[in-house]
Length: 369
Ligand code: TXA
Ligand code: MG
Image (cartoon, rainbow, N blue to C red; front, side):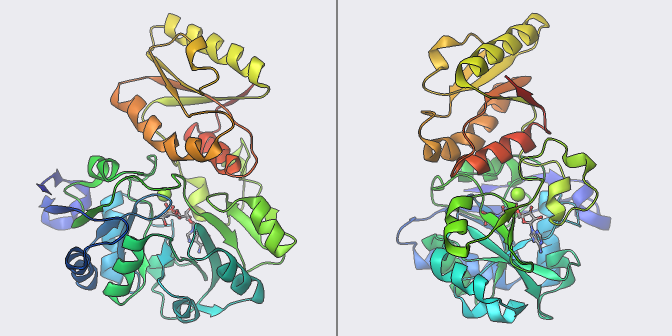
């Protein structure tokens, strides 16, 4: 399967540029080596490859090749001040990319890698400026996914990979989402089906003591506290006033993120009150002629009236909610919904990442019920 797409502003001085995107279905558990080699050759030549991880699909390029990394920024229309996570297939690589690896970081690697945890460390000289957007630090993780690990190993380099969506959009949890955003803009897409977790990795800053979570994700805060003792949460994790923060340590924080085309409103609070408020807001906007979607849960979905109602699953099952979140946001967009009103869930475990993404997707449009 092959897609061609024309794009203007991202193509530089030579006018319009087309890329033929090769889409290959690949076995998630035992990836066919022939397909991995085609993708790895693309990485080695400085091209771009979208691949599955356990969290979301990533858009990869050789982390140590400036031109290659530049292609990621262009394809995603990513702001140049937003650094990338470097993906490795073995721990030794960390000591090449970072100039200092604290004991606590080693403890986390032993406990959670491969897995959805990204460590921020002091950067070594081998990492080009463009990969880390000029910062003195570098973000590194080892994904828990056979296709990703095979691709990194076979590429014989480390792979810089942000989520494989257009900048600002919800992250892709299927290859179809990647195709929707990036077909014609990247070289290869490896399609291994839906990702297991559905929200991105936890990003933790290990350059300070105690370490600080910059972005909650697949490895819960509680788990990190159990291993490290003391961990803090960056104030932006659950803030509703991101725009007003003066000093932003994770540069990605200040950009619009995870947002569908529709306006998102999140209603948080006690479940009964939340349901009432969600329906009230839906009625108000439908009266104004808007097409309204409600992101409900199994416990509430049959109680609502709106143009589209979708469920994150049971309120008790955060694993399912995380897995469904981005796909549902994209579905509402596909159905032309103007406003998505979402129930908030608990902020424990994976719930903290879900709450953070919903708040960011809404641009901090959070209503307390
Ligand atoms: O699960 C994930 O982490 C996925 C998969 C593909 O691995 N990747 C991902 O990458 O979510 P991205 O680029 O969409 O988000 C990475 C976040 C951004 O908010 C970025 O600003 C932050 O990590 N980040 C990267 N390098 C950093 C650094 N040196 N210091 C602070 N934050 C950094
Ligand atoms: Mg992203």
